[in-house]
Image 1 (tube, rainbow, N blue to C red):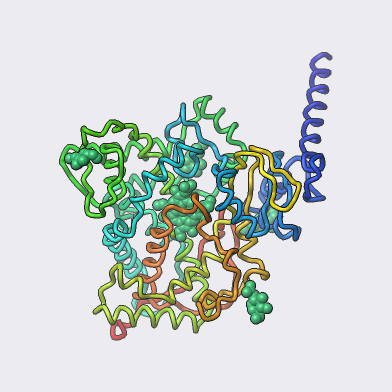
Image 2: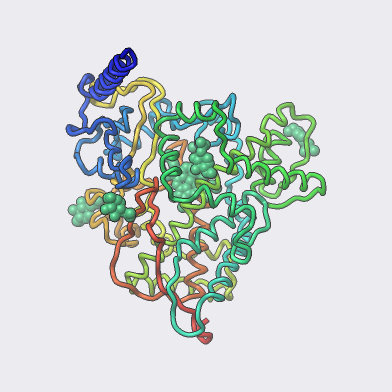
Amino acid sequence: MIALLLFLVLGTTLYWLIRHQYTYWNRRNFPSDPDTTIPCGCLKSVVKHEKSMGVAIYDAYLKTKSPFIGIYLLFRPAVLIRDPKLARQILIQDFSSFHDRGVYVDEKRDPLSCNLFSLRGQSWRSLRQKLTPSFSSGKLKAMFPTSDDIGNKMVEYLNRILPEEGGAEVDIKDILVTYAIDIIGSVIFGLDINSYEDPKNKFRCLVHKARRNNIINANIGMLIFLCPALIKFMVLLGFKNNTAIGLREILKETIEYREKHNIVRKDMVQLMMQLRNTGKINEDDDNWNAKVNTTVGEEKEFTLDHIAAQGFIFYIAGQETTSSAAAFTIFELAQYPDLLARAQNEVKEVLKRHNGQLNYDCLQEMTFLDLCLQETNRKYPFPFLSRECTQDYTLPGTKHVIEKGTPIVIPLLGIHRDAEHFPNPMTYDPDRFSPANANYSDHAYMPFGAGPRQCIALRMGKINSKLGLVKILQNFNVEIMSKREIIIDNHSVGIQPKGGVKIRISKKPKSTN
Ligand code: HEM
Ligand SMILES: *[C@@H]1O[C@H](CO)[C@@H](O)[C@H](O)[C@H]1NC(C)=O
Ligand SMILES: *[C@@H]1O[C@H](CO)[C@@H](O)[C@H](O)[C@H]1NC(C)=O
Ligand SMILES: *[C@@H]1O[C@H](CO)[C@@H](O)[C@H](O)[C@H]1NC(C)=O
Ligand SMILES: *[C@@H]1O[C@H](CO)[C@@H](O)[C@H](O)[C@H]1NC(C)=O
């Protein structure tokens, strides 16, 4: 009897608390979504597994026209910034009030969570400064041959599986994911891997678990954004991230091996060893030495755990984005014969000028492909940017105040597919970005984010997705297919194509090579 009473009281209180939470925006007289559903807010369709989180936020974008609006992410009040000018104000000019992402991080107890994406305030700033030199164009140029080599292995693999005559259907996304994972394994973790020949290698098996689109991964992905406190609690209870731990072991072996045998390789592990041992990454692109410099006091402040945390986030942030950009570009080109022909001709012409030798500089000359990749990154961006308000902020020209601690969501997918900023948004039109046309709102285009926290590896992402694209166009014929759209997997956060990206390709006749 008492138990029942207690249950009723608790239940009623909880119900009342949640109801009350859902009046947050009304109480503050803040414009908000009139038909919010309790208890999931605009994420009801995500909780019911009918939409991905990215698409649910896109839906919220479509529901209104106001420049900003209060929403509920589950029970957490958040602000959706629809107006790209206001978004830029928040990301760039007023960065000091929005310098964190508000995602899970625990500097004291969980060093593996201390990655560049999640770190806050001063810790983030200092790490960002230290890591920036590792993404200079000189460093990327030095890493290029490694990526090129992996691109060639992808070509060899396709040549093995394709018939001599006629085409075959392939899941180009899957093939490019392998390419992107191998690049990260080599360029970032310093491994010598070839997943096309050895698909069960240690690195790939380890990371494979993390990228499966299932309900658990989708929910953890969402909670890292929405409920960092819950993740913190789970970690306290002993919940471990086995992928991150496994990656740390791999890095540990690599670093110990290099230190023991005095090996210097031009990759990211080397630069992070340099950071650990000398306190900084050398601005000089020819200096890859990582010997301990005893005159530096702060050495070893950047530990193995910190190296592993960065390797891990580079993997998460790099493989999906890089492979999608190349795969979606091929998917779109296959639907526009004249665009495909221009892309193929450009690759052919530029390579001819360079005697068939593909290198870093030659890639820069393929300017139409740049337009294509820009257009792909417009139509298929990561669906939203996120920030946390770090001090009370009055929205410019209004009386509305965003309270410290409130999540900010910038619905990139909505902005990038809005006809107001990009006429005929669902049409794949690389020429919209050509300087002669430029029929789009420049400020609305943010595929790599904006401001001090924009993608640190934007150059690396562009180069590797372009390289993957060039390898396919250079070596294979892509068959034209009818117009279609990607079907987005309900269990993903970003734009994960359900069933992959299927296209038909064939070997080039020997004479035209
Ligand atoms: C085509 C490829 C890529 C795209 C479209 C992309 C996109 C993005 C976006 C939209 C953000 C958030 C920016 C913001 O909040 O303002 C971001 C951040 C980030 N990206 Fe990328 N990315 C790509 C490739 C990569 C690669 C290859 C790496 C690592 C090797 C990487 C590492 C990161 C990191 C560490 C951050 C967090 C930066 C910080 O908070 O300081 N990205 N990226
Ligand atoms: C997502 O869920 C909705 C509703 O259950 C369903 O109609 C749709 O087919 C699903 N989409 C995918 C790609 O699974
Ligand atoms: C653990 O790692 C997986 C990838 O292995 C990642 O998707 C997830 O966000 C991480 N979870 C936590 C609790 O940090
Ligand atoms: C160690 O660091 C100091 C100060 O940055 C520098 O002057 C010196 O050349 C470094 N020594 C080595 C061996 O790199
Ligand atoms: C694109 O061009 C049309 C016609 O010139 C113009 O009305 C429209 O405002 C332009 N849109 C953008 C986003 O620049």
